[in-house]
Image 1 (tube, rainbow, N blue to C red):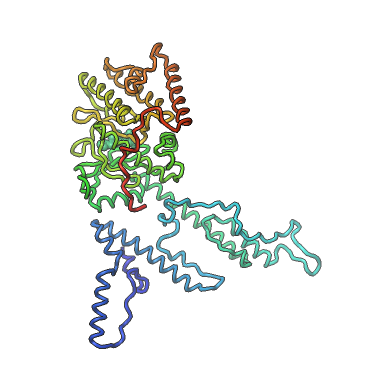
Image 2: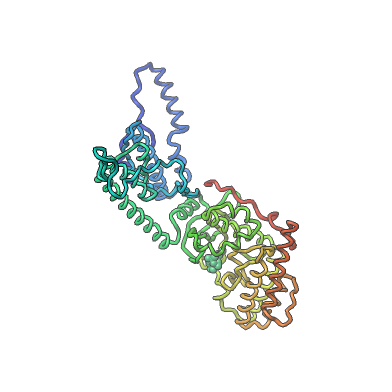
Length: 499
Ligand code: ADP
Ligand code: MG
């Protein structure tokens, strides 16, 4: 923080000191003072008051102030640099004095495509002619060797093109800049060390992501929720999965709706590779298809969170026991906590039940699957003893970000997989009433695929044929064969102020 107090007065982000007022009459002074006072009351330090009103945590406030200060310092620096260099062709860079080093400035490229195709750059100056292999050009008195200072200098300038892409070399060729070997070599050296520094910084960031489970940007979003009062406190991590991190938090308050005392924050991981193999759940989901194709990967992660929110809302409507959505903020979904006094409800896989309760749990799951398929028009698509919790004598369904509608091109295959997980689990737990995967599939979908020889291959072929027929129908008629109840029931997304 002491950086703030070290600034020269003319660089203060809060404005420079007013120049001494010229002598004038008392009446003038009075009105002048009044005007200044009013003006100050209305709009002095807008940034400071804005932050103060939404920030209660000292640390957070300090960080935000520092960030704001650094930005404004850099702006000022840029202005000074411009003034200093004026129209001069040779310019001095103040880059090294910046508070926010370009590599650390994460805000600039968040959601934009931050690369450009430079292969065909019409603005690129032609490369200067190189000296032929024999080492000289021209004849007699006009001979120029490869050691010629001008040729060499131009060549050095052109070679700057090979520096790392993030190094701004400027248009040296355009202005016929000739770099001596000495200058070129030290520039090259500088580039290498900058690249190493940048790589180190990057590594450090990556490490902290792994260690603390969420990246700085996510942490800031979480802090903001606490500061806005939506959450009282964020307590700790319940689970770290491949695709998400789940935190327990104490609920605060929201204007329009009550916030439960205990909530969870499901943070969808922004490390993209984990999600790659899940693309097909969303790519072919016609509710999201259109938007999926237009989005960059970071935004696709937000779609997962959004999808979970919509699916949970449908399930709540059908009175399926599941978490209640409180708030969606980018890739963080806040929902009610299933459990009590900070202890999460156990997964069905971990809970020890007597045979009566286990049988009861099976019938509950059967009923929930039917409700989900028939009322919500959804297939869970990741249903197993890992995503069912046992709480207050009931089975609760969670983790529905990948759930899709039965008309999804692979919808029935996903349903079959869910049925197999459920059937296998309950049979292993000794529930004699547990249906076979085929019976369960038919009971849930109402499709009545003949079970006969109970050959999985035959059954699957029938399922795939059905999916195919459905797809053909969609292609031809632009309609679904199954009843579609989507979109209508989905609550509109809350506008995201930060976008
Ligand atoms: P993932 O996609 O990482 O599996 P889940 O939604 O299944 O994410 O959450 C991971 C774990 O976090 C769950 O197995 C469960 O133990 C816990 N969990 C998730 N949501 C809740 C909730 N609403 N209440 C209590 N525990 C939860
Ligand atoms: Mg899960």
